[in-house]
Image (cartoon, rainbow, N blue to C red):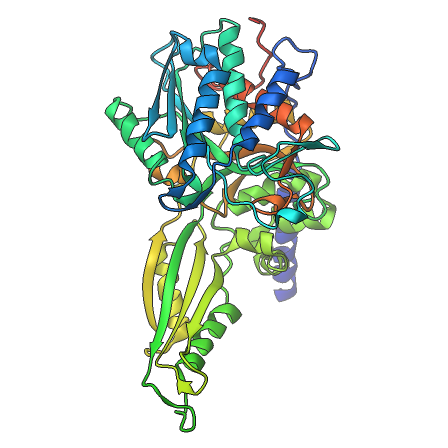
Length: 503
């Protein structure tokens, strides 16, 4: 009797595993591809390419809060105004500079009952270092072997210029959008956005904007080789951002001579605490958040063993968590990560250190809170001599809708598949942070996607050496934003997009 019960249970498990594997192996329906022969395709003319190259030459560097290159921001802003005359003189457009260097635009649609949306980007870049190691000067915009080099090429002047080119093209063709939309370019995103995006958000409130259909901002790219075994490009739309907690750990002691040391030093006590944090990562949250849906969306292109594992996370979570934890980028998807970024102690070679301090940077999984993360650390350290102080923190952002009936997500999905027809589109979580924190009161539907096609090894170029974008990819950026605007004009979801014929 017991044997029959066991066999029945095993049979049921096999049926469930097989059913979920088959169900998640279904492919998405086709979408009309954007082709160079289409009437609504924007070719990358010499003038459009030259404008982007010039944009990369402005050294709009941000170093710290309030420390940014004001002269270059002013010059870049003037260049934008002069380069897009239709946008800045159209009766459909209201625009202004906010806090001297940021920009806010309103493009008025002819159907005022449709809720507007917001396209975001930023004008500033991080500093360029190791200049001698660059294949082309970081503020040159030079083209080498089909790639445009420059700081900001993928973070994120390609989006600034792509948005501007698409709207200029729209207005030059006398097209009035149905849905109104806003464009916001902050000037200090790399240093929290407190002078740019924060001021733009306040200005939107002053203009009476209370709710947006969705917000588009920089985020996850189109990636090749992102997940082992998946051979198609993966376009992940960030529907949330990880939170962050920067903690200062400190241990105080009594100074003395090194010839008479105490049993435990401040350095030793703190080093033990840090070792425990690094050796005992926060638990895997696989199965509780968006990373589950991200993986499930890739099932159709996985090999059979992978399909079984991912389609049945409910059963194989421990094994799959272990596999994902082997690589830093996939480990960061499934848990709150811990980075020890600073350690300071000691005043002299022969003096017992009276104080030891360390900085711990947590990037918090959306299924956790700052409070939960700190409590985990406190229990793990288990030493009252280690003081834990919160230097700064922000909880994970709310999760935007990414279902079949979520307008913003489906508009993004359709647009991405028009430009990259072979790409697998999936919801994801942005493991870094942007200045969208200043717009959270306008909508939960914030979608973080950069229309940048990245290949293995390209991720190191982000904030690193030889930042670049291919000429072809920049043309795709322009067409992505143009089609995103056109697709957003529909009042409700449409299963298949047909190209517009009003050009």
